[in-house]
Amino acid sequence: MRHSITVLGALTLLAASTSLASAEDVIKLGASVQLTGPQANTGRYYRDAYQLMVDKINEGGGVKVGDTSYKLELNVLDNQSDVNLSVRQYVQLISADKVNFLLGPFASNFALNDSSIAEKYQVPMVQGGGASTEIYTRNYKYIFGTLPPADDYYFSTIEMLQKLDPVPKTVALVAADDSFDVSVAKGTREHLKKAGMEVVVDQSFRDGAGEFASILSQIKSAGVDAILWSGHETDALNFIRQMKSLNVDPKSFYSFTVGVPTSDFRKALGSDANYAFGMTSWLPDESLKDKWYGDAAQFAKAYSDKFGYQPDYHAASGAADVETFVYAIEKAGSLDPKAVRDAIAQSDFDSLYAHIKYGDNGQIVLPQIVVQIQDGKLVPVYTDKILNQPQYPVPAWGKRG
Image (cartoon, rainbow, N blue to C red):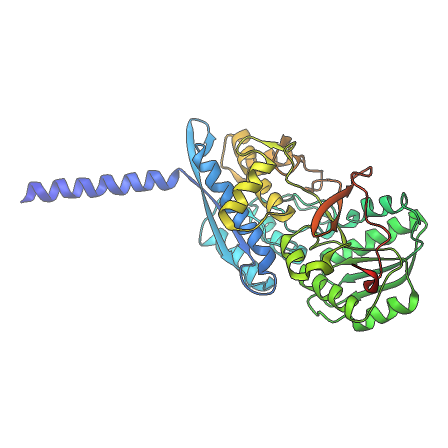
């Protein structure tokens, strides 16, 4: 009996040590993401892209650090679209859940607050959900981002407008009051001024408010040539619906920072989505290569097959965040946060999203691709040249087929 107990005890110890060794061969990535609440529709892109990328990397053998292969483990918490909860969850991920590295949330105001936790604990965060330049002007060393600067979101659009006939002269600039959209509006004013275009209506609205009658009345009275709008997707949908119901027609053009590239946007509006311009930092192009999926088109297919909806640039940037960590960990040959942070800063590799190379402030620089919904389909129309003929000027609501 004593011999059996001894053997059983030895086996128990062996199992425990094997379990411990297995746990040590895992790299934990943690994130707080909007899975419920008003921003959940976009938050899901990040959860799903993170998981898809983690699974693919693990299938390919994981992450090589020296002679050891590590599997990635993903811990995603639901911040319920609450900034304060998100901050607390990042503290939890580091202090209680003991994650090695941090992936980001959606939206600039979240990334702005959450990155302070990364900086305080000196744990690298790579995020593809916040583009506001405010995130990157605090001299933080542990925050990196794969969305281009919000200040420049409308640069390609304004450049394109200068090449169209007639060239718009007067503009209504409408932006939400959160960090990202304030940055967009600031940069857009400067780009419009350089282009010789006059901002005759310049209005902000409370993020998530959904009511635009007063602003649309001003736009209608001013008879502007173009509307440049910045906010979140739900508000963009409400803005277009209210444009139509109030019969507000800019003379030639309107564009949105978000929504237009997504299939959800087109489904929600039906034919009313036609003619809307937008922008994206990514399209699922075969020219974008990576070592796991081969190219962006194959990533997009795998994503839609698994989750039942098409990825947009949010998903692609989220996938690139995971790729960044794998690249940096293997380059550093270490799980030390500072060593990995330094390797991230020196990143220089091709991903399914873009060529990844972070600026001195930690933010990537990418041109926006101007897109338009034409006959229910998303069409790329401009980068630094006309790609496809835009449907321009935009016809009045009462004159559409």
